[in-house]
Image (cartoon, rainbow, N blue to C red; front, side, top):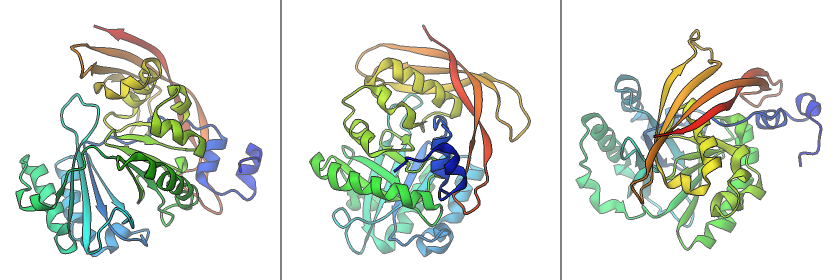
Length: 343
């Protein structure tokens, strides 16, 4: 229960970074990361902090992953999910691969495979290889492919070994979604526990795929709106970290457009572009940026764009990690100071 006053969060029993962030009013928007590809592999818990270096299957792929990201500059996010008693098959490994289908898009395309454990690394290598060579040949794994493109996947970070807040606050949200919402979906929604994907201070944090939206500071009472999308979009505004198809300042603008447009905006094809921003020293955040968000309605020939100006509107103190002695740092907060539809 959050009944204490703000100053107590910083001094007494609370050393969870996400409670500090929330108490101090940190806006999660613009913190979602930007990805064109998601690679999600089923690996049993426990997950030590250095799971990517310690697990033999994953360790064998680390060099390839680094090559993709650093040499080929491919925006790829690897993640692990915990096997589920109902969804998973003993002796087999699930691999979910999501990719951006076009410049303008609304959700990621998905390929899912359930392969024998000893073939998981070979499958991931084949996916990596096709990314580098820009081919699409996974025919040798075709027999393991699953037809699940109609299934929505909610993934909640419960990786306590990386940050205690994710275990403490992610686990109850995961359990509620898994026990109440997944069974009521007629197989159209699965709920998973994942390893860390950034932003401990926003725990509990969640990825909604194939949409690619990130959420943070979640409360049990917002889950209905997040899953069903059957009420005012303003109800989810403060929990939205952003859409991973866009970069930071584009994400900030996109939330504002979404709030004006309503839920239907999620289905629009979108792409963003930073037109100009304040020049700052490396490692510093600019005070302003101007962005353009192009959109198209998939159901009609309607298309257009928005121009937005994002400006700093203050700063809050936050903690990036949970610890006995929390270190606070200042983080700039932004607002959309100008938004206009063009074309």
